[in-house]
Length: 100
Image (cartoon, rainbow, N blue to C red; front, side):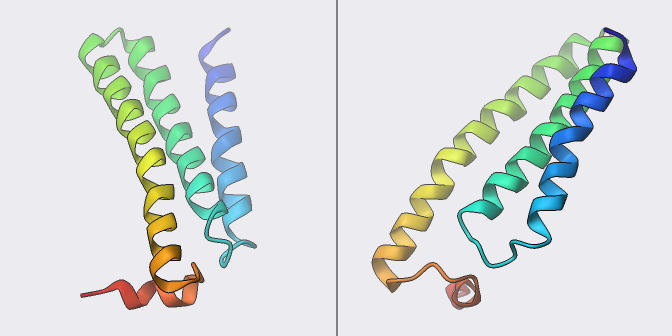
């Protein structure tokens, strides 16, 4: 596969994330998943260019970013569960009350 095919493949999760966030502004479990898919598309795009340029340190930093994304996807639902246990709801309108 050439570079254009990989870049086209990395655009698909990005567009799906943008397309999913616009109508789902109040669905809190879906929003982090869609944001995570957009970040995955950016990371895949970065990896494609780094492999094309043969930059090994960049590839390692992209793999580190993937690891951090996996950690974030495990901690995010835990925060939602704790918020639900304390407040009884995870409505997007009430999330702004967590400031301070």
